[in-house]
Every structure is written in structure tokens, then in C-alpha cells.
Amino acid sequence: MDFGTVKRYLEKEGKEDEPTKIDRLPYKFFDPFIIHGLRTDLVEPGRILCSFNVPARLLNTANTLHGGAIASLIDLVGSAVILTAGAPTTGVSVEINVSYLDAALLNEEIEIEAKALRVGKAIAVVAVELRKKGTGKIIAQGRHTKYLPVTSKL
Amino acid sequence: MDFGTVKRYLEKEGKEDEPTKIDRLPYKFFDPFIIHGLRTDLVEPGRILCSFNVPARLLNTANTLHGGAIASLIDLVGSAVILTAGAPTTGVSVEINVSYLDAALLNEEIEIEAKALRVGKAIAVVAVELRKKGTGKIIAQGRHTKYLPVTSKL
Amino acid sequence: MDFGTVKRYLEKEGKEDEPTKIDRLPYKFFDPFIIHGLRTDLVEPGRILCSFNVPARLLNTANTLHGGAIASLIDLVGSAVILTAGAPTTGVSVEINVSYLDAALLNEEIEIEAKALRVGKAIAVVAVELRKKGTGKIIAQGRHTKYLPVTSKL
Amino acid sequence: MDFGTVKRYLEKEGKEDEPTKIDRLPYKFFDPFIIHGLRTDLVEPGRILCSFNVPARLLNTANTLHGGAIASLIDLVGSAVILTAGAPTTGVSVEINVSYLDAALLNEEIEIEAKALRVGKAIAVVAVELRKKGTGKIIAQGRHTKYLPVTSKL
Image (cartoon, rainbow over all chains, first blue to last red):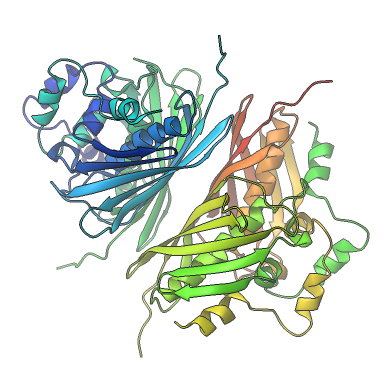
């Protein structure tokens, strides 16, 4: 595999005017880009349940929900569940891990469940699972560890 | 933390016409969205070195490179390095993990180094590190495990 | 921290005649050393539930169940659950990860639950949780990924 | 796979008088059991290099260094390297992960290298690699995250 092939693989620019479009995307576009379309179905202390239809924009080259998008959904819904467990902030990411178990296809309806495993004074650990809504089959399971910096209480 | 607050946290729609813009994004936009601007500096068997300037679109609410974007960069550059080690495909994701060690700021120049730890007949494992280009300080380090399905050789 | 201090920290030999005792331990003593005392309470396809009283031998210097012992229990019970899901072997370890959430004390009764998340033709992924039996509080949660080599069926 | 088979798999008692021997093992035997025979070759700030000959006691049923023993070595040498980076304690385990890349055989000489990726006020992250001494081939690579509780400085 020569330099040119890898360069082309990595520096794929999208079609036509995509590079220009991407350059014009606004600050902090990442969160809405990932999460647009997510519906929050249930919130209780230490647990969140959401629904999501796999959108075209988040597909990978194999036409399934991108592994990076799955990791990002775990990051985002996992951060939110820390708030439901009483922490004042969602904290700073320390570690994330994801096992990919099944593919999610375009327009497939999935559910995302986040559970707080531990929300302590300094460390929060959450588990997040993505499942196919029809069958309950697990698409991915991950854990996210965050550091909760001490916040002054003025 | 009540339902409404978590719902607003998770269903943030971006400003003004962002929701409409996001709905119009094309198929498989994820890869170019993440990787646009990446420069491939070095490719050798089992190793890739890239440069990247942290773009505004990939910032999180704390104005640093988003953890989900870091995981996605590790996924993408990690997949490419499998090709340099002689595998016919980049395979299917089995597991990814990331430790977040330092923040990367807007426009900061970072380097991304991917190394193939093992590329076997069925399993490939790569390590990817993001560093500040000036000081070499590590921003994140992760590993990505992929399954290489047997491909028929017609 | 000088060389001597770290050397003493790492090369702790145990008391009195322990070094000699350890040298005399038999082949493949690791499994029985970890698992001695484990009781299998429930086995169903894709799920195992065990009980375990934290033994003195597996304590760390803080007098709680050693993190390495917890990882080893996850490895062992996680491997067994692959068999219950119909795989012919427990496979070869690819990856393991563990989040440590709470301490387990000497003689504390814990339960260990292993679930098969996916047992495919080539890859098996299991999740294992250690909980305090009285309260259900989670001590540790981990996932174990194994490769199932193709076995000829003569 | 019926209950009895899994029970026998998990509750393997070792041969002859092993169960009795195991019951008699002393408090906190885990550390010396794993680490006996380790030689510390190099200690510098943020880095430790050790040598180890794979002992019979740490073999698995496939006659290679047990995955649980590898995780335990990563835990132990990884904790020691935190001390070399100036932390007053080795902290409390938050997360560990290991990729298994190659088998280590009985009496094989391996080297274990631990590097501190970050030792902050509250969080320490280290990377540990096990390699075959002759060829440098990687046996396993892992990261260990620890929480460093604030210690009063009397």
C-alpha cells in the first residue's frame, strides 16, 4: 500500500463542493451534527432512554452507522446521565470504550440507554447501550469515565 | 435534574437554521466531516503520521477538540494503518478505547500517529496517539481492534 | 522516587519462606488460585451467575479484592459464558477492560454475573459484573472480547 | 452446555491436595504470587523497564502466560510507574484495559515497560507493554487509569 493510496484513503474530500461546505460549518457543530434527531423518551435518576433513527449523514462507507458516531452518541448520552444522578456538571472525559456488536442500517430505529454505574465526588462512570428497537439486539455497548472537578459553591 | 433540562441538554438543535442544514447533509458525510483538513505526512508499513489543525466545527462546549471527534480520528487513522500492514481491507470494528489526557484548542496543530500492533489473518489491533506538535504532549491515546473477514480471492 | 524504592515496591517477596513456596507452586496454578471457592448458582444459555466470598489470599495492600484478581475473575467467568452460548471453545483473548467502582472487603459475599453480548462465528464479546450480594452495589464491570478460531469438525 | 459441565469448568479445584493448599495461603498473597521473579532493570521519571521469565504457576490451560496474570502485571508495574512520576501514592484503580497480541510461553524471557502518560493532581494514566525480549514482538499492551485521592500534607 503506497503513500498515494493511503493519502487518498485518508484525505477523502467528499464530492463536489463538500470541502467548501465543511470549511463554512460553524463553531461547535459537532454536538448538533451527531445528536440532531435524537428523542429523549425517559429520564430518571441515573438512567436515560432515547430513540434515534439512523440518519444518512452518519453512515460509514459500508452504509451502516459509523463507529465514530456510535462512540460520540455514547459520549453525549453518557454525559447527560451524569446530570440525572445529581452531579453539578457532566465533567471532563477520562476514558471511553466501545464494543461493536451488530450493524445499524439507514433509517433503522434504535434505542440508546445510559445508566450511571457510579457518580462519586470526583469520578463518574456510566454504561451506554445501543439496541435495535424491534428486536432488542445489541448494536454496541460502552463505558465512559469522567472526572468531576471540584466546583466552588459561591 | 428534571426531564425538561435533560431533554434540552440532549436535543440541542444548534442555532437558527442549523437543524434544516443538518437534515440536508449528504449520505456518508461523517468521514469527510471529521477528516477534512487532515494531512498525511508519512506512510510506512505499519505506521502513519498525520498533521491536523483543530477546526472550529469539531469543538465541544468547552472549546476543545470533542472527545467523540478524537475517537473518530482514532477510528479513521487507525483503520488506514491496517492497510499499510498488508491487509486487503480495513475490516470491521470490534472494539475501540481512548484515554483523554490533555485538551486540544482551536487551531492548535496536532500530530496523529497510528501504529499497527498486530495485523493477523482475522484480527488487527492498532494504537493511535494524538500529540501537540510543539511540545509532543499527549492529547489522547487509544487502541482499535478490527475483525478482518476472510475475503474470497477470485 | 529512586531506583531502590521502586525496586523494593515491585520486587516484594512476601514474608519469610514465601519465595520458596511460590517457586514450588505447580503448573497452571493460576486458575485454581483465583477461582477456588467460587460457586456456580445459575447457568442458562448466554448467562451465568456465581457467588464468591472474598478470600484473604486475593486481597491487595489496601485489604480489598485486588484489581488484578477482579480482572482474572472477569476473564474466567466471562470465558465460561461463551460455552453456554453454544461455542465449541472459550476462544483466545483479544481484549479485556474493567471499570472499578467500589471496594470488596475480606469475606464479603459477592455475586458475579456474566452475559454473552455476542457469540458469532469468529468473535465473542461478553459482559461481566461483580456486585455486593446484600445491596446489589456494583463493584466492577468489564467486557471481554475473544477470538474463536475455526475448529475442524472431523 | 449443561449446568454440570459449566460448574466443572468453573469450579476446577486443581489436583489432589491443591484446594487445601489454597485455603492455607496467607493474606495478600496476590502481589507476591504474580510478581515473584520480576527484575527491575531501569527506573527513570515516568518510565520503568522490567524483565520476567514466564513461570509455570502463571500458565493457562493452553500453556501460555494467563490473560489474568498479564492484566495483573500491567496493574502492578503500571502502579509503580506512577510513583516515579512524583505522585505520593499509587492511587486507586479506576479502569484497566488490555489488548492481547501474542502468546508468551513457559520460561520465555519477556520485558515489561511502563510509561506514565499523565500524572495529574487527581488522575494518573499509564501505558504498559509486554514484549518478547529476543524479538521485541509485542505480547500485550494496556492502559491503567487511577484516581489519586488528595492526601493531607501534615
